[in-house]
Structure formats: structure tokens, C-alpha cells
Image 1 (cartoon, rainbow, N blue to C red):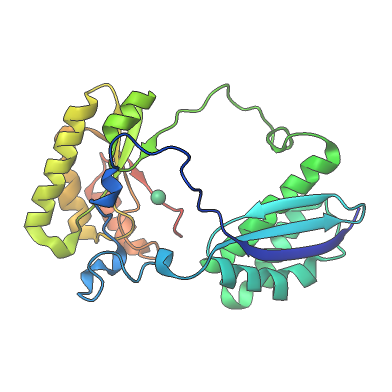
Image 2 (image 1 turned 60 degrees about the horizontal axis):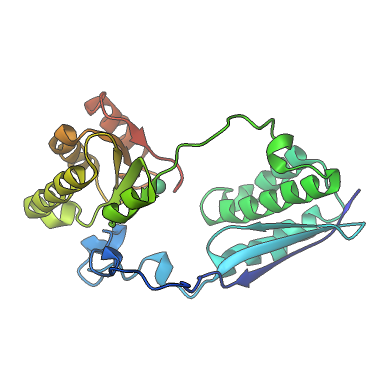
Length: 267
Ligand SMILES: [Mg+2]
């Protein structure tokens, strides 16, 4: 079976809440520190990609028999352009079942401008759509095609600033984002410690707590922060520096051999 058509388009996915919250979310008053916050023109996250006019990119891959696979990722217009103007035309006519070959082709098709960064979001949306299509053609769930079920249940966590609510919902792990970064100096670090300490008190000692820097720290700040947070038993520290700073990762790992570090998704 061959690929007949590949079509990408932008869709709006922001859901309207069906019920009003009993208490307002702290997301209205506490803001995650962003990589651009160190420039004075962007104190509250302006300049971040979520302020761009892009919707979500979606892609439909149609097989010769009319069966369709659906995939989505992030960063609308640039991603749909890469799919519609480059990847799609080059993959049309290929074997729909050749998922690994098609992935290799996509990576090579993008070599000139790198298959990482925004390009990886185009490859990802198409890869998801191809797996969805393969599952539909075989009449099997994709997790089976990937070798599963691999486990009976998954340990989940809730991210944000409303930990009382997450505990009420029964989560046994939660992740905080960092409202302050290196540009807020020692005062910001003190405020961050207060937030982590009060959150630990709210959730108790039997719930895992993580902290996410959303790529806005630097190596020096990351080390200092991790040492300061050690009494609060963080399960991991996440996305602490710019994703391309490989030497930074190396130095942080050497200086914090005891801290579990989570990263990679932004790269
Ligand atoms: Mg992350």
C-alpha cells in the first residue's frame, strides 16, 4: 500500500473549560520564568513562542485505499510549511508500512537545514500520523506495534502551581516551574527556595517533587540552586539550561553528581 496524499494544516485546540474552578488557579498570578526574561523588554514571558500567532500543526496521511492517519505537534505555520512544501511531496508514493525507512528519509530530506529544532516538530507530526495509519491498516493499537503493552500502569505527575488541587486529585508526584531565574539574583533564589519549601510542606514527604527551569538558568545558577534545594528532596531538576549548551550539561553533571537531571525534549 502506497501513500496517496500528505496534507498539513493548522488547527485550534485550546479547550474551553466546562466548569469553573472552585478557587482561581495560581497560574493567573505566578508566571514561569522564560529564557527571554533576562532582557528588560520581556519581563513577563513576552517574546516566548506561545505569544506567536501559530496554532497547532496537524497532518493527515492518506493511503491508496482511503485510510487516513492523523498526527499533531507544535509551532503551526513553519511546521505545516515544511510538511506541505518539502516532506509531503517527497514521501508521497512511498510504502505506508515502511515507518523506519520513512523516518530516515525525513531526517535526510532535512539535512541541509538540520532535522532538529522546528524541523523535528514536522518530522514528529508526520511520524505519529504514519504510525496511526499503520495501526488502522492492521487493525491493532499502535502500542502493540511498538512491542507493548510494556507495563500495566504508568506513574503520572501534575505540573503547575496548584499543588493542593493535585493532591486532592490523588497525584503522588508534582512538578513546579521556576518563577525566578539568574536575572533575579539572590533575592529570586530566596523566593524560589520559599516556594519549594512551602510546596514540600503542602504535599508532605510521601509525594515526589520536581522543579523545571524551562531552559532559563545557566550552569552556575543551576549548581547553586540544586545545592540550595537539596533539603527538599527533589526527584529531578528539569530543562535547566539552553538545550544547545552541551558543555554546560557536562559541567553541571560533574558538579552535581548526586542530582537526577531531566532534559532533552527542547533539543
Ligand atoms: Mg521539560
